[in-house]
Length: 420
Ligand code: GLY
Image (cartoon, rainbow, N blue to C red):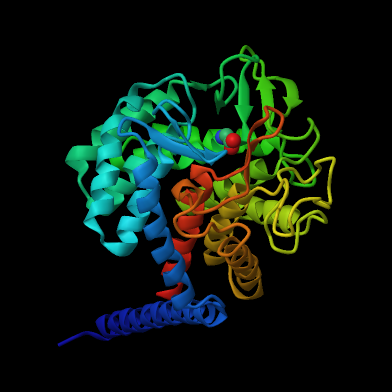
């Protein structure tokens, strides 16, 4: 028979058990409520998203016919398809797009096209001459592993690539070197390579990749951003002591300007770092960056930024045809849309709805003329009107493989929200 003390202990256990049950139930209810609220707030319909993804599947098959077997699609300019070798920083986006669209459609032909491209891309795992290995290997092989679960095929490639990427890390600068030349340049775009490293730690069980990602992200917060949460493009460091040699631009209008794609890369990077670490510093930072972008007086109503928020010829009073959007950058818009959709999932209530509304506007804008190409045109690219680099005079007002990749990703992320 239980003694009075035992009875008291049992009662305490029972109370604790009931309390814990209540807490779990409340948590589950809160999550369900949040998910229901978000679904209620979704303005784009399943039919709309399905239509865009169906169109993307049809269009990427057109693109497939334009790409030489040993190369990757890059853009379509002057009625000519332009491709790149696998060393070029955008080489992972086409296989990545094929994989997202395989995920959507289940169309095995898309998976096969992706696998064919992965075969020629694999050698880049040894490439220590670029910081872009996240774009090149994670958007491609990372998605392949996620969708097929084939660790035997992809784990070694990803981990060899991650080793190549961290060979560019300098513990004195506390950042990964972006380019050759300069002194030790680090560009805001490099935030996009960090997801590759957080995943490499999960894959290998070795925390060193993730630690480098966190250190790089923190160094970038400290040195790349201005007090208003706009970002410089390039910070050139002194590798001997980690001091700053110069704050510059390469692809923006001028050193103190706000290059649109750079802002989108930064936002996407900090949203991702919050997801990967749970560190609220990154969420707060991402929200501040988002506020800077979304409240900028030069942000057009359709949510598709000009190539630089401070470009000298703004606002655009284009002398061209009515549907011509000179100097807009659809690639910045698609990265922004994808990042904002994710940001809406890490926030709640009005704040979440605000990010979602902005993302929806961008997705809607991109999903029609003048940005979305007529089926079968545009060399098989989905979007028109992106900007590679105006200062370099390259890829101005053209389709770009990464604009399509992040647009497809945004559609897939939105589809997941619709599915709750
Ligand atoms: N990472 C190069 C670019 O955004 O153009």
